[in-house]
Amino acid sequence: MKFSEELKWRGLVGQTTIDDLSTLDTPGQVFYIGADPSADSMTIGNLAAMITCVRFIRAGHRGIVLAGGATGMAGGDPDGKDETRAKIDIATINDRVERFKRQYRQIFRSVDVTIVNNYDWFKNINYIDFLRDIGRHFSMTQLLDRDFVKKRIGEGGKGINYAEFSYSLIQGYDFLHLYREYGVTLQLCGVDQFGNSTTGMRLINKLENARADVFGIPLVINKSTGKKFGKSEEGAVWLDANKTSVYQFYQFWLNVDDLGVIDYLKVYTFLSKDEIDEIEAQQLKNPGGRLAQRRLAEEVTRFVHGDEALAKVQRVTDVLFGDRQLAELDESEIDLLRMEIPSVELADGLTVSDALTSTGVASSKSEVRRLLSGRAISVNGAKVESDSNLTERCLIKRGRNQFVLVY
Image (cartoon, rainbow, N blue to C red; front, side, top):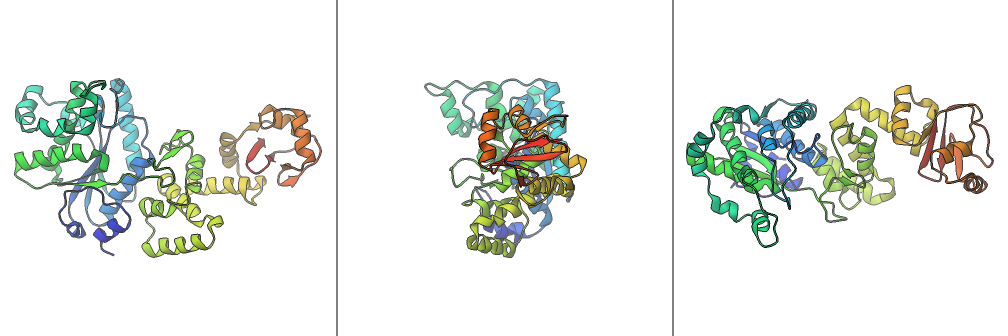
C-alpha cells in the first residue's frame, strides 16, 4: 500500500492544502509539528499526531518537532477557549518544555527527528523589526473571521487580549523560520489548528515566494459518546507515567469502546491492514474476548512506555483479573500493585474483615460477614466463608473487581 493510501485507510487525512496526496509517496519532504506547554505532559491526543509523524518519517520524510516555549509564554492557543488562560510563570514554562522534550525523545526513539524550541529564535527578535518585517504581511481579516474570535469579541463574549490575538502570527512565524533554517515545507497539525497553521504557509508564500502546505489530522472521536477521545473518568490520559500510571494507561486501552476500537488500532498502532482486518474478524466472532482491546493496549503501552513496563502491567493485570498468582510477582510489581489498589500492611492479628474495613472496601464488619456467607470474598483466589487471621502476603478480592493487597 502506498503511503498516501495508507493515510486515507487509517483515517488520518483531515483538512489539507495538499492538492495531490500522492506527492507524499515520494520521500524527502521536510515537515514539522508543535505543541505548547499548556500542561506538564502531553496526552494521548498529542500521541495520535506524533504517531502520524513517525509514519511520515518511516515513509522517508524528515521530521522536526517543536516545543512551544515562546508560544507558551504568550499564553498559548486561545482557539476553543472561552476566556483567557491563566498566566504561567517562566520557570514553569521552561520546566514543561524540558518535559516535552523528554517525551519527544521517548516517542521518537525509533526514528531520527530534530527537536526545537521556538523560544530559541524568538528571544532575540526586536519587536519593531518583527512588526515591520513580518506583521505587515499578516492579514487580520482572516483572523477576525475565525469562529472563536467572533465568539470572544461578540455580545456576551469575555473579550480577547492582544497576546491571544497575536498567537496565530507567532505560530506562523515558526513555520517561516523553520522553512528558512531547515527547508520545512509542510506543517502537520490537528484539524483544530488548521487556521493557525495556514498563517505560516501564507507568510512563506509572500516572503519567500515558495509553496508550503498544511496537513490537518482529524481529531480522534469516541464514537460511543461523540466526544473527543482521550478522556477517562478521572480526566485526561497523560503520557507521563507520574500523571497516568502505566497500569492506568494500559487499563484505559483495555476498556475502550467496541464501536471505535478498530479505528483506534488504525490510528494508534503500526499493525498492517491485513493484521487489523484479521483482528476485526476475530472480534466479530467473539466480542466478549476483546481481542482488539487487548492488542491495542499491548501495542500502545509498548510504544509509549517500553517492553519492560508493558510486561509488568500485564503480569499485574493477570493477577487481578486472570489466573496468575500474587506469589509470581517480583517486588517491583508488588510496588506497582500497591500504587493501584487499596493496600494494608501485614501485622499480627490482622483479619480479613480488618483488611476490608480499614481500606474502605467494606463499610463494616457486619457487611463483611454477609459477604463471607455469600461467598463473595476470596483470598489468593480461594473462596473464604469465615473471618480469619492473615499470616502471609495475599490478595483479597471482593466480587469481580474490588481488591485489597496485604503486603
